[in-house]
Image (tube, rainbow, N blue to C red; front, side):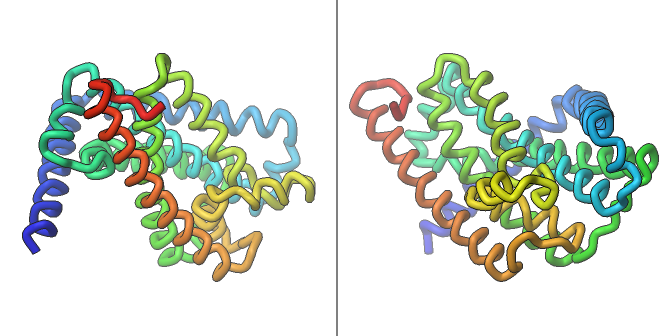
Length: 266
């Protein structure tokens, strides 16, 4: 019981820390308000340049809109993962060892920024998609959308924890982050899978990330590529695996830190 209350206290402390950091860094809000509209317009224009017929297909435009929402979601979490390498330079990781705070719990403080980033970016996306491109941004299954979004949030909290521990062993973590923020979403459901050739669709649907990301898009559009029950089971299984790998990566990091005096898992 004491262990549970201690864990709850650590989570509460990290949430409070995240709120404090975000409230003091108002430039982040301004950056979000400026960067996402630019990326959204650029993304849509790039697609319409090569496939202008999409503009006349409401179903495709809706799928593309929520596909880009998935990109915003993943991108925000990937940049969340870079916080640990930065904090390692300031001696914060040593404090995690001393207080026995799990890295995934420590990253909860950064999820305040991540959640705000997703909210602002998502709102800008839906407004611009509707106003400038005439996309229908209504959600077909609101409760399912909220549930899959919550599962994805938990999954990427663990996944960003895994990535952050690996980034401690990399000299240029920002390069890896930039690659991941594009590769993960666009190979796992951000691009409408029913628009892909059958061979490409088969590869994309085999990705574990597909079971996390596609249900978000599918519950918004009402178009599931695979049976929804299968998607839900896959999403829960992927989240459990991510949690286990997160614990494994963290324990390996701590063992090597105590043995070698440096924070690296490789």
